[in-house]
Length: 183
Image (cartoon, helix red, strand yellow):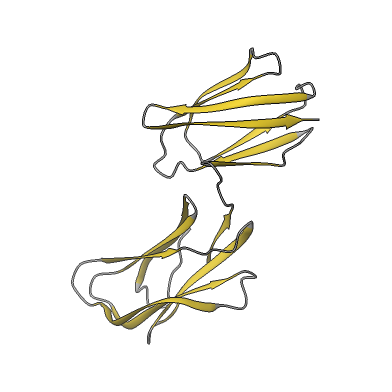
């Protein structure tokens, strides 16, 4: 998502979950400047508080300058709204990201479930993963290849009640193994 200031000082603003933190990046267009940059966060998108600050002059060169913040304590299981107050230049548009704490490299919800479930895992580098789901008897129940997102929606309408084991494998990352309970 991108935010723009009134003077087009901000080239972009984005937020992405990486593991159990949120990384916020923004860039100031070449030739533009501001007096300090304050990162603000809100749970409701209305009431913001400052969570970090870069003092001094930001930008100013003829080249685009990139800045990064890490929010190590985002609101868990909520949408986090971020914006940048660029000293003397205004406030950016708001970018939002729903943060889910990843335990053991993944989070599955709801669990137990009967209709559907979502597996969320850290795939910020957009690596291809293969999902394999093993049924209560241990046999392969479902397989999906070339998954390149960090969320997998699972339709459980054809699943029988029981405990299923899933594995997410990639040649570029450790295997993630978890348990799904279908009621």
